[in-house]
Image 1 (cartoon, rainbow, N blue to C red):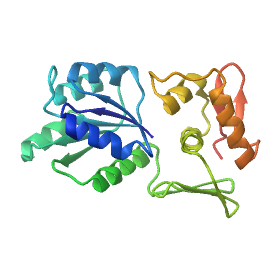
Image 2 (image 1 turned 90 degrees about the vertical axis):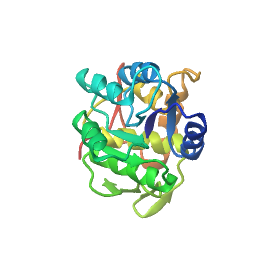
Image 3 (image 1 turned 45 degrees about the vertical axis):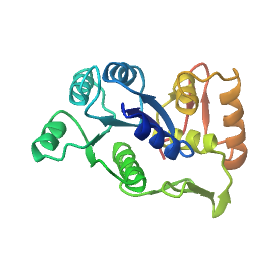
Length: 218
């Protein structure tokens, strides 16, 4: 899962990044202007948005993003617990609220729920042609046999599964796996595709030459 965190509190932001780094890729921006620019440039799976930001207030970031067509689910982090604040945030396009202070376990649960809803799933289990995936435990099996997937193999598989029936471009897959600023070797994506095919079978992932990769809808 690719997360965009817009949070100016250094201690909180660092804590969120460290807690989520093992299972998610997090891009962190510390003010509203940079966060809005990143949100318009990226295609994150979920946005974690603070309200009290320097530069541009979080609600204005959200309103601008929605007006420009950004559809990514947005989880607002805030110390503002008034009902009027929550209503205003929801009216401007927020999908969920989490009041500070909060537990990291609850944050992760809410992120998973937003991700599932955004991809049309109602629970944490996914089945596809012999593949069984528990997205909460990040456990995958094929025909009942457990699969030992690296973090990036798992993220690659989930990205292709969530886009079943659509071609995912090479650029989007690289951004999803590595981020905007990370250097990578030219064949890094092909290596992950090759290794993943060895584990799940060559026929599940199709190459669309000159464009990217895809998995059939059913």
